[in-house]
Length: 152
Image (cartoon, rainbow, N blue to C red; front, side, top):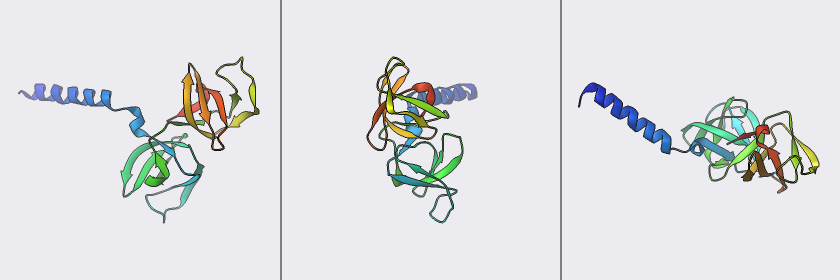
């Protein structure tokens, strides 16, 4: 096999691999009531942010039971492996606020809470067009327009 053939074969394998690897493989959701994000991979490192259940994070790497992650603002932190899960999808409000509706559309009334603030996190239940049904940490279910969410 010539050098150029080997190059194209390796490129082809890389494309095939990237096609079959799900983006969810890099998505993590906080699965505990609260989780401390830290500057480094260990308890001795200072806390950078305390987040609540369902906060989405993007996995960058792993070291000694800790994940290096990126948050909604693209800042990097470290989180203990047992504080997160990839077994469900989650989202957080990325805009200053988002209207919380009783159904998937502008024709549905807003919920009693009416608006959710930036960083409020949810577990994703289902999608209908541009609308996402989510559940908060208290078990309340609402619908939010996709463009207001950072989804992992």
